[in-house]
Picture 1 (tube, rainbow, N blue to C red):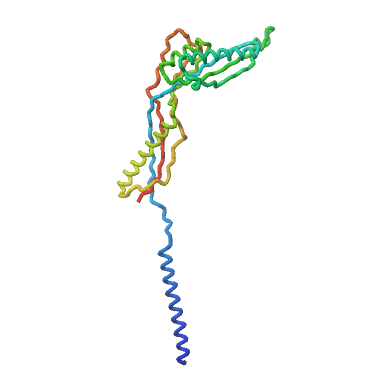
Picture 2 (picture 1 turned 180 degrees about the horizontal axis):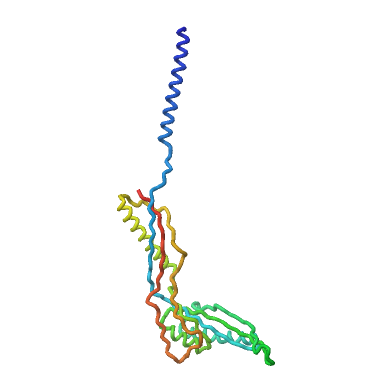
Length: 247
């Protein structure tokens, strides 16, 4: 074998070795730079909070009913009586923006069906919802409403004027409690909370539940003294589930 041939073979071997080294180095470098898809360590905590709030408004609903053989007359009688009820509320200092007509109805009714004196009459009805902020006015408002012609009063509903604000406070307390629980659990495990991954509110969204003071659905004696006692407070309960990231 000539020296020239050997020299050419040596060059080929050197190139192969160099290529293998480059491949090995590239492979090792790529392995070190490969991103990891490991999921973050987490801890899941559920917590609830109940906020008690004093009611600051009451809602009273007055109903008016009239009956007449003429439909227009029946409706006009109901409307006239409702206007009297509105005037009675205004005389107590209740603002018109706190009063709302919630129902107006007119329907025919057959009386003495099958009898010689069978006839059709018309029943007209209307409902007025009144918000009262001064609880001392509740009793007088009911009495004046009945005296003005309201045929029935449908309960007294106590509630808070800003249910969204109350519920927001309850949610803040629930999340704060969840963080305290997460810190305690993470600390016991020798780790620490680093952030929030997800927050879910438990159950269906709800607002402070009104308190109903049911009253008979018939006319009240306007001369009687009527005292309405509100509840001490109204409860708002919420729950949350929080997924925290930990180190």
